[in-house]
Structures are given as structure tokens and as C-alpha cells.
Amino acid sequence: MEVRFLGVRGSYPVSGPRFSKYGGNTTSILINSGDTSLIIDAGTGITGLADKNNFRENVVLLFTHYHLDHILGLPFASLLYSEGFRRKMFGPNFGNFSVKEALEVLSNPKLLPFKISDRMLETRILPVEGKFSEGNFRVFPLYSRNHPLDGVMLYRIEAEGKSLGIATDYEVGKDRSGVSEFFSGMDLLIHDAQYTQEEYTTRKGYGHSTEITAAEMAAESRVSKLVLFHFDPFHTDSCVDAQERRAREVFPETLAARENMKIEL
Ligand SMILES: [Zn+2]
Ligand SMILES: [Zn+2]
Image (tube, rainbow, N blue to C red; front, side, top):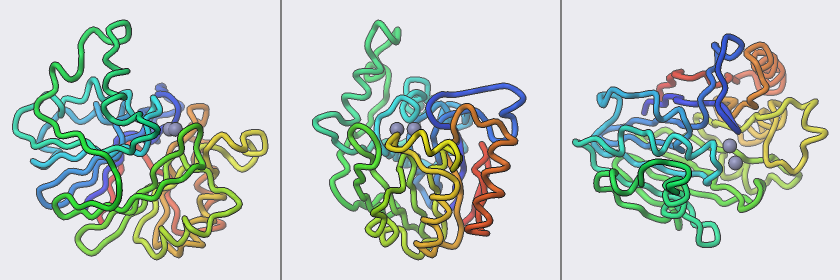
């Protein structure tokens, strides 16, 4: 499977020369295998790929949660409005707030001049209630409360005999045993590293990790490779470079995610 990072930023998009290496778009990851494109979250990164050839005929959008940085690209994702795809959206249901409610909130006429569902071509919307399969992909969810207010869904994704973990908007807490077991032995772990270890002292409970706690999780889970992800909008390229260097001291097989970076598994 091929993993492509469409947006690696957390909180809100940024632009300018200080962000040119890692990119400024918010969270979205495209994973292609066989006839299926699995897209994790629809931050502004999802708007960048206008060419339909980047996607396979089955498009599956999978949400971790519904914070704005993970859904902001949705109204402008050409995939929703293009012929030639079979579409599904999967998302967790947090106290009766699910994909449908996120689409409705975004379609508020005071916020957006059109209703997404009026223009969106046929799309099945489904809840994440347990493991499921789509094309080559097998998706295993794990709910974590370690992100305010409703928590976040972590995912283990398997295809073509390889495995990949998604832990965005997840704060590594004191009790990490269930999570490190969930990610145990995976080929690749994509992990939140919003804050530096130094910043974290004043941001405990904000629902995000650091380059060090992400690297510790990778080491404890004995994964093959770690990708740091969901960078703070204040973190310029040189700051993310430094995060990558520090993480490698704990877990050498670490890379910082860059917009448009591809990893073949
Ligand atoms: Zn986020
Ligand atoms: Zn969030």
C-alpha cells in the first residue's frame, strides 16, 4: 500500500516560507491499495489533489474525530462532487455527533453558501462501530478518551500483509499499555507530535503528544518506523527539524511527516 501525506498540520492551516518544507495544510492522509483509496480525515490537505488519477475507484473517507482541522477541507474536496467514484464515509459517533452532523454544521448557510449534501454525489455514510473491511483494507478502531472533549478514534489499518497505525490528536498518557499493545509490531506508526517536550509542561491535558512521547510509544510498541505528525501551527520548519532530531535519540527510525511525502509499505 502507498501512504501519501496530504496535510500534516494541526489546529489550523499556515502558509509562508517558514513552513515550506513540511507544509501548512491540516490533517489528511491518503492510503491507496488495489481498487480502494482510504483517506484519513478531511483537513485542508484533502483539497490539494485535484487530479482524479490520484484516487482509486472506491473512495473511503475515515474520520478520527470532528475537530475543525480534520473536516475543514470537506466542503471543497472535489472527490465528493466527481463522477467515477464509489464513495463511503465512516466516522465514530460521539454522543449523537457523527459524520452527518459534521456535514450539517459545515453546511450552515451562515458559514458556507451551499449545502454539501445538495451537491455531493451518492455517498454512503456509516458509523465506526468495530472492525470493518473495505477492498484490501482491514480497519481496527480503538477509542481513546485522551483528547478533549469527546475523545478520538485510533486506527490500525492492514492491507497487503502490512500494517499501519494512526494516532493523531492522541495524548500519550500515564496509562499507555492498551494502546502500545494495539499498535504492537506494526510496520509504520503515524503519531501526533503537536508539541515539543518543553512546551508540553504547560499543555498537559490538551490532547496532544510530543516528539518524545511519540518516540516512546513507537519504542514500546516495537513498530518498524515512526512518522511524527499533526504539527503545531507555530512550529516552523526548523522547529520540526529539531523535533525529528530529538525523537531519533529515543527511536532512531523516525521521520517527520511532510506534505506530499509518500511511503510505500
Ligand atoms: Zn487536530
Ligand atoms: Zn482534535
